[in-house]
Every structure is written in C-alpha cells, then in structure tokens.
Amino acid sequence: MKTLLILRHAKSSWKDESLPDHDRPLNKRGRRDAPHMGEILRQEGFQPDLVLSSDAVRARDTARLALEAAGFDGEVEYRESLYAFEPGAYLQALSRLDDAIDQVLIIGHNPALEELLSGLTGEHYLMPTAALAHLELPVEHWSQISFGMRARLANLWRPKEV
Image 1 (cartoon, rainbow, N blue to C red):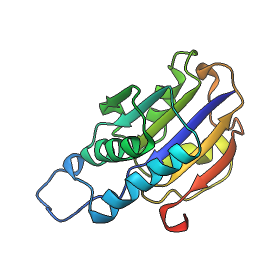
Image 2 (image 1 turned 180 degrees about the horizontal axis):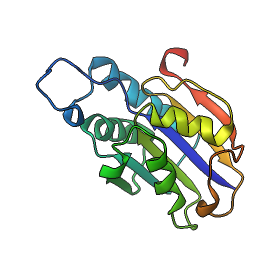
Image 3 (image 1 turned 60 degrees about the horizontal axis):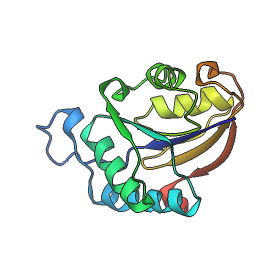
Image 4 (image 1 turned 90 degrees about the horizontal axis):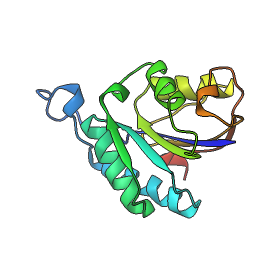
C-alpha cells in the first residue's frame, strides 16, 4: 500500500493585482495556516519519502512553511507541470514515481486537487486553502494509481476545523 498526502497551497494574496497568478505570495492567513498544517504532519508522524510541489510562489511558500514546522528535511521537487488546475497533471506525476517511495506529499492547486481526491476516492470532498488529506492507496506500484481506484481517505484536516 502507498500513502498519498495532498496539501492545497495556503491562502494567497491578491493585494498586488499587477503580479502574474504564478507569482502571488501567501497572505497573512496563509502564512499562519501553512505552519499549522505542518504541525499536523509532525503530530501524525508523517515523514514523506518525497514532496512534489507546484513551482508557483504560493505553493513554494506553503511547502517551506509547512515542512519547516513538520521537521521535514527530505527531498522537495518543485515542478512547473504541477502549476496545473486539472487533476491529470498530478495523476501523471504520481504514476511515474519510483516504487521505492512509499509516502508522498503533493502540494498544489484547486480545482485539480479536489478533483484528484474525488477521482481517487469516488467521493467528493472540499479542499479549502491549506487543507491536508491523507489517502491510503490500494496499490503496490505507483503506475497502478488511477481514478476510480477507491483509495481510502484516512483523514482530512481543514484549517478552520482543527
């Protein structure tokens, strides 16, 4: 069985409307919520073998703040391909992982992450900013990951609920 952790980037700022979408930073709430979700990762004992993140500024900032709070010192890959808003890019990235990796944290954007979560579990869940989902995937090989596989949602933490 493989473990997938899905973290939507924390709340971003629209203060500077001249910034391209890719370059928007976190706002005050985002800078507060990202470390809080990292604390949950630490408390739950998650230490991903790999972190995959969108290369957008808000995703990178979320990764940095959350992983620092989690005490994570492993590998983080920032990928342009994960600056995506449909789930196929995330599914493709996951399906190509080395099978020696058992636990992955992926950080990105909606609506793609909600659709990824729904596609893997067969249920619809809301993923507000900084939400963290823990899925257990019934596969031995990442290449087996697919929509409709009925992954088990072990937990879903939303910042306003924890």
